[in-house]
Image (cartoon, rainbow, N blue to C red; front, side, top):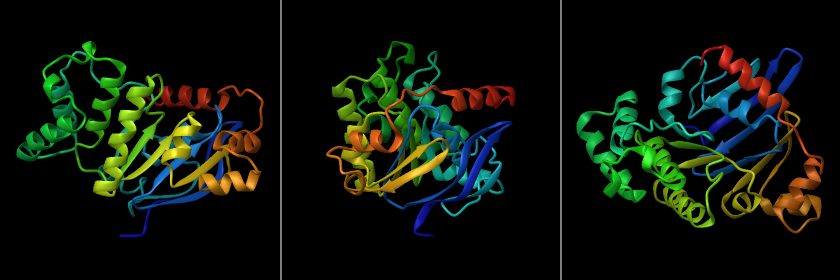
Amino acid sequence: MPDNIIDVKNLSKNFEEIKAVDNISFNVNRGQIFAFLGPNGAGKTTTIKMLTTLLRPSSGEIKINGFNPLKEKHKARHSFGIVFQDPSLDDELTAYENMEFHAVMYEVDKETRKKRIEELLKFVELWDRRNEQIKNFSGGMKRRLEIARGLIHHPKLLFLDEPTIGLDPQTRNHLWQYVLKLNKDEGMTVFLTTHYMEEAEKVADKIAIIDHGKIAKIGTAEELKKMTKTRSLEEAFLKITGYNIREEKASAKDNLRFRRMGR
């Protein structure tokens, strides 16, 4: 297997007159925690959709765990789990049923499925609530279940798109404990987006900042602070991307096209 679990070369995505992602290149090493940061409308969501086979690039190359997502979609998808920014659980099903449904979709055999579901629900401290409907869960419990569900098929790579948005500090802290434990104990690579700069500064081994569809800077938190002569990642981020409030123009157009495609 190659050292890089993600390889991106000259990747672009256009929506008519809008260039949502503009010729970006980067790689993510196996076992790394990689933060992909940017203002609203910078191209983060579009990039993640291309990496996770949900959106076809206009040009460029992607390799996920050595597989080309365009030609080997099934193998690429089995290489990763994903926790979306928006909730994606079925509120009418129980925690166990949500896990089981996902396991069947990923073709996890019945015997392994039962053991894996119990193991993961215990890991995220939801085993005692396994038979409750999701609609009765708090936001933090749902987030923990989504992470457990994303791990059901033993992925090599976990995508976390704004995983802690709307969570209280205690739940955010517990969630990162789970993620860091997976990274350390299982060598799982983590690709995350977040607007909480202190999270990225604390957990990420490497950080890429995207703005206006282009990669502005890549480095460790310390390297980015040194480049910008700042004392925190948030200060470095603002110095690199500017202080103006952004609208989600590209992202909104992306989502509109995405819905029209019937994905």
